[in-house]
Image 1 (tube, rainbow, N blue to C red):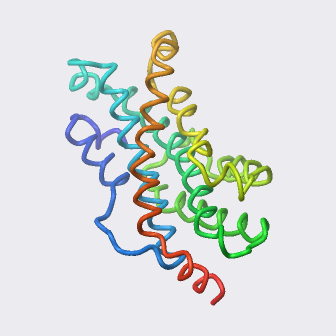
Image 2 (spheres, one colour):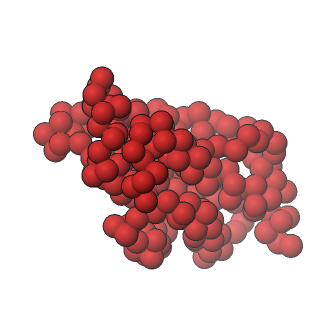
Amino acid sequence: MTSLFHRFADFWSVFSSRFGIRSDAGLINSVDNLKNFVTTRSAFIAQKTLYGYVKTRMGTRYPEMFKDDLIIHSVNIAKMHYFAACLSDLTIYAVAQATVSLGADDAARRALAENVYRSALAENMAESVDEFSPDEAIREFQTRLSGTDWSGLALTRDNFTQSPAKLIEWAPIAEHLKNMDREIAENSVKFAWADIRRSFEKRLDADAVAEDLAA
């Protein structure tokens, strides 16, 4: 694995290719479109905010730092755990928004959300590491789903709680620096989600998603 990452450009190329956004701007009118949006946008937020934070803290030293295999491995550990958190937040929000007018019961929402979450994790496991367990991530997500308020908090920006906290938890930055950065770093994640929510709401065709679910 580390042979891919001896140069900073190589690292960023692989990181971006795995955690990138495929170009799409059409309606979200099927379950597959919903999965694609959630997967790519969660990956984008994970890429943008984790890499941005790490690069900012490293300053002008970052090209040299990214020649260190241990640092690269630490970033790879962080990106998987952080991606899982971003995915948790956006999956619940997207499913809540897509089903709010359908009269779906909570069990159906949980089933759809878990399906989306599992699919998105599987799609991004090619660059995973031993220190990340998809099974554990799924169990944590299932626990979160059991207490989700689908008609309340899940529909709002306040649902995005996991990603800001997990950025600070997993970023490979010294603890005393993370303690200093916590408020700014967490707010940067919350701010980054705003455009994603607006895009989703603009593109969502909830009736078509409902028809696809029924079919």
